[in-house]
Amino acid sequence: MPTPYGFEVEGHCETCKKKSQGFFCDLPLPVSRDLDILRHSATYPAGAVLFLEKQDPHGVFILCGGKVKLSISSSEGKTLILRLAEPGEILGLAAVFTGRPYEATAETMHPSQVAFIRRSDFLRLMEKHKEIYQAATRQLSRLYRGACEQLRTIGLSGSAPEKVARLLLEMSSGRAPACTGVSITMPLTHEEIASCIGSTRETVTRTLSDFKAKRLVAFRGSTLTIENREALEDIGGM
Amino acid sequence: MPTPYGFEVEGHCETCKKKSQGFFCDLPLPVSRDLDILRHSATYPAGAVLFLEKQDPHGVFILCGGKVKLSISSSEGKTLILRLAEPGEILGLAAVFTGRPYEATAETMHPSQVAFIRRSDFLRLMEKHKEIYQAATRQLSRLYRGACEQLRTIGLSGSAPEKVARLLLEMSSGRAPACTGVSITMPLTHEEIASCIGSTRETVTRTLSDFKAKRLVAFRGSTLTIENREALEDIGGM
DNA sequence: TTTTCAATGTGATGGCCATCACTCTTCCTT
DNA sequence: AAGGAAGAGTGATGGCCATCACATTGAAAA
Image (cartoon, rainbow over all chains, first blue to last red; front, side, top):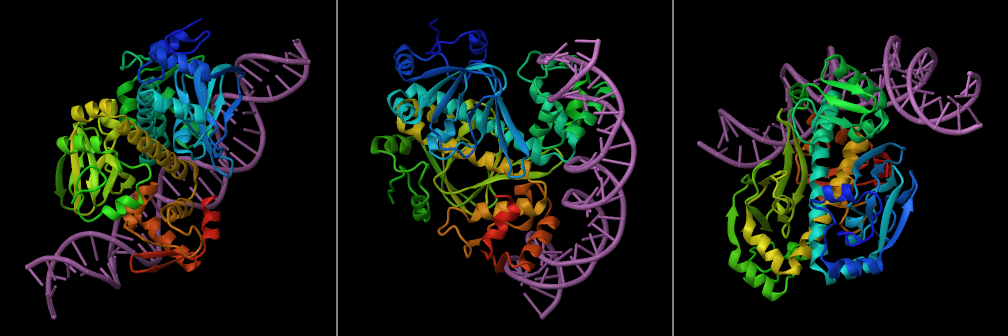
């Protein structure tokens, strides 16, 4: 099944197309032909590790379908989740480009389709096609902005409620409309939320209970609804 | 004074040249000619603000000489220093490329020479010269890696000593040799160190005193010498 | 069904460090 | 030399939340 992305995608094409701003999609034909030759596609089960933090960068992974968790961890075993990658993203870009080790660990959260391109092949491809530079710059810019946002959340907010509120608002953004009443499907456990904001599971549980008691949010299964965006923004210092 | 960077630099050329890996230097002649036409050079005094967080990105600033502090701040007035830019760096790159507001505030620490290029001009220039894409990707990759490191320091380390140790080690890295005995000229006040690691001035003062008492570091004026790198790495969890 | 394990809820405790309130030093200015 | 301001050192205090410990729910396997 040929697609506008330059490689075959089973199942999640629609998602990829919808989120294509800034992603690795819609490449001109000559570029996608070259990509097709070099890529190695595979389907990974949930929980598979694509690459490990501090490993030498053998290449980039293009996420075609599924969801991948990117995280860093300390020597004491604590973990910080950087972001969840969506279909269309290139993983390992900064590492491959600088030649330094992967800066994070990539692990599939669901069964995922992934295309791999060897470092040397990818670098040669970049030299050949300006469009790839363009896509890479776009993605890296977004990554950097995201990291800054996370630094703001973790580094500048004193209290745990502040961090949780910011995370919820961030997760709900990008969805229309950005106002009270938005619902999001929470893909993270309390434990994982904690490791997005540098806190602990217990604190997240307590904070969310508190938010619920104050009618700021509501839960229906794994669906979270923001019932009072104003108040949340207030708590988040925004 | 013509230079290999495509624009005139007074005073800090050597620095720039030494740190040129990944920077905006050594461009081919046609590129630097085009840059020369579009750039607006200026010298700013210490403490000047090049751009503000959340401002619309009018363009990029190329730091030719001096030093610039990049920081983000919260609504309550707390500040987090992201990094200190050295000559050769392009400031505002991610913002200009994505079209979203500047992600940080840029403020000169010393009198600095800065070249400005309007957003539209810069984007057109990128389209024309692949070398600029290349330089941009390199710089963005480094920025992203740096942000990840800072996230690791701030988000994964529980204690203040851990954060301070990591910061000192990071500041001393990049200098030869990376072992016990390295001296660095500390360009930051305790207050600024605190806002690099999301802590407070008092805590930094106390922690550094403690390190000094334990013979991990020594001070001579504004020069800091690492006397026991092993122990520092141990505290930093590295 | 029963089993089982992950996820969640909740109390108790204590330590780290942010905060406040000073003093002291060191320059730079006048 | 006196004045002032920025930086640095230091004690006291209290609150937030990490940590430990255990109960409870829920949802997949067996």
